[in-house]
Image (cartoon, rainbow, N blue to C red; front, side, top):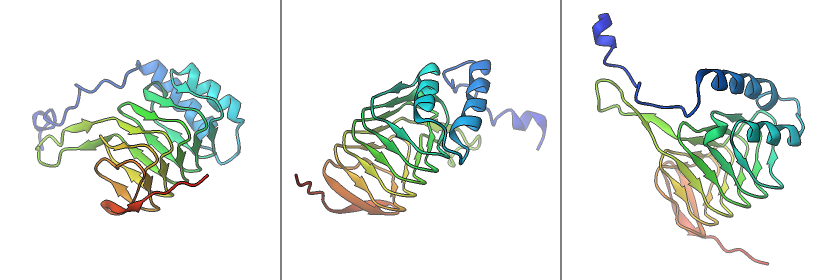
Length: 184
């Protein structure tokens, strides 16, 4: 493939939302304080996220080995739990409501590529997890998905479309299994 052919594979339209220096500083903070397996103080993690532009509520727990792409595109409500090895790959905005659980190994994916285009164009869409949502271990939430209030995405499931409130979804792609009943 010639150099001119490669110019077609260009996604310069994408704006990461911060300049090169800020992105590099975050890369090192993420690498040294979020991704390692040693347990860095939760207070320090929340402080760093806020310094880089994230909105972080009270009572948030961020376990070790969590990977966050761009904190300036992240909003976390109160009493949220983010498990080990969770990956928030937020090329677009991610909004996490109050009392949300993102289990270990879960993946919030806001970017993809258009396989129908010769340039394999980058496509990005935000994700919203409303209040009380539970994203199970190793589950994937795809670009543009809204998980409505108290929805559950079961272990190893893939949400490619919106999840209804108070409903449990399972599978790849995730399909509605039953209503979620919450007791006292």
